Length: 231
Image 1 (cartoon, rainbow, N blue to C red):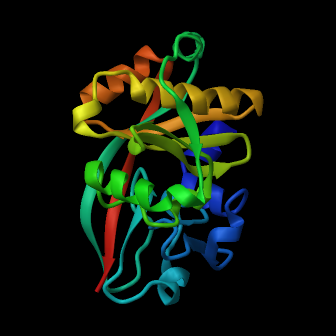
Image 2 (cartoon, helix red, strand yellow):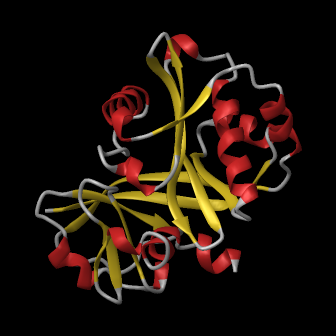
């Protein structure tokens, strides 16, 4: 089950828990504009994105996630390739210890936090988070004197699996364990709901990969995020 679901995560999410955010056909789908710039197709690397072309605006950029590219329509060009480590939580003992010793005030974020969330993530990790990406799942944050300084939440979600994403901390607040605290809160929620936590991080981000391994995540495979533009 893991192989068939996580090898084609956007497609699986858009055909299960996130079906309400989907546009497209039985062969190819996308998240609605303003939610998330991810697309997927039936068959993954061996599929075709041809039927999705009418749902993409000229000049729009978006992502296809997988090992190799499916068949692309004319006028779609690859702008960027980002190889990532796809990691699954295998052992939550370290995260449980973090949660039990958590001195930071982790709070669940909601609609009133939308602007703060958008500004924080795009200051630290611009390009992936839209104003309504927060609607995809649960987000937690840490504030200092009212200012949102760290956050993390869920992105692609499918039956039995949930992706951790938007894990970010303002530069002046790094080194305080905020990311660990937020990941611990999310994974604890997943465990209670019998959901497997997973994440995807750039292979070049050795520091983050080392942190996630320390917290109990193991690399399952390499998966590539390709930024595509419709000319």
